[in-house]
Amino acid sequence: MSDDSLVNKSSILKRKRLFFLFATIGPGIMVMLADTDAGSIITAAQSGAEWGYRMILPQIILMPILYFVQEVTIRLGLVTGKGHGELIREKFGMKWALLSVLSLFLASVGALVTEFSGIAGVSELFGIPGWISVVFATILLIIIGFSGSYRRIERIGIAFGLFQLFFFVAMFMAHPSLPEIAHGMISIPIKNRSFLFLLAANVGAVIMPWMVFYQQGAVIDKGLDTRHLKAARQDTIIGSIVTQLVMIAVVIATAATIGHYSHQSLNDVQQIAQAITPFLGQFGGKVVFGLGMVGASFIAALVVSIAGAWGIGEAFGFNHSLNHKFSEAKWFYLIYTMAHIGGAILVILSVNLIRLNIDVQVMNAMLLPVVLGFLLVLEAKVLPEKWKMKGIHKYTAWALSAIVMSFGLYMAVTTL
Image (cartoon, rainbow, N blue to C red; front, side, top):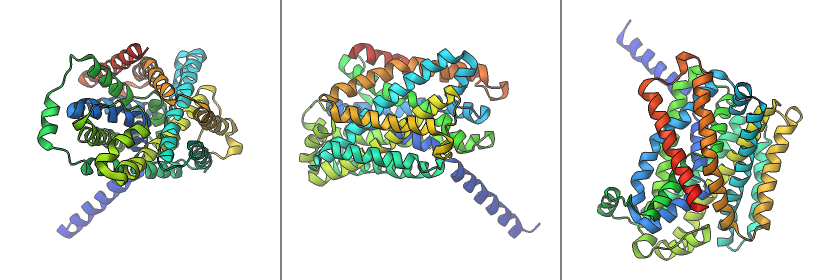
């Protein structure tokens, strides 16, 4: 065989591998962009305002933690071809499945409150009543969900999620000091209780209960199997890095501005925008930050509602694919719709959204041991020996999960 033929064959193989990768990626990036939701952005902004650059290193350390946990979900989905709720029902019975998915649905509606609060907060920055933007977003999300194609919904979701790249624009506009960033990364006040609480909030926010249900269901709805495991892992690695880089961008943007001159309490979108606008101007404080927040809130609202509807469909055994028409999966689409409507009503009628958002974070933290516990036990009991974690991989995943659960419970107990 000539050298030209070998080169051509190698080039064709590379193109095939690249096409295979692009056909596979999506679920990991989608769920990770949703992980950086409105609540996470507010937590990152508060971290930068109060502690400057000291919360950057924890965000970097959280990257492998996020990957290790979510990697278990994709293996369960690819190997078994079944969703998380279905596996719990088959292995532990209907009662445990009901407990798991009903908790998931409550967490999903609670998360929707946070996302709609973020959307309402951005619209109010521009003088548009929050209820108008919430109603519009609810209708748009329902229409997208009824499109009848998982892949189409994934593309739309990622397109909205990429609006989070505006947070990097805000970061560069803040003109951070590299020496100060380096100093902040090595001066962690680990004994300070206030810092520990914010650290727990950041760790607790890195794994949301709905993420496990979503990514396991997504790889199934996309038609992936064990042949796609390597590419699915790469998808998850990319997502893990991107979502934490977004958090770092928000930490740096607020640390270089608000945190450099004052230490304000930031509990909602308006407070962050008002505090950062004097440093970044109207464009940076409102338009750039607002677009990033809308992207974060919208993709998260889409993912959590799908995860909740998927989980309940899996537990009860009715059709729950986004590739089905309404006539083929009525209950799935009704649950998806009611989750959005319920979240929107809570936001429109609530007089204390800050309190609601805090309650949602506490609820997610308290659910973490249940969700991660089921995840790890299912991995050990359901998967064939060939696909199970072994050795250092197994012990690392269990140890990292224990750390996440501990910090989540610490935040819940401290808040309560």
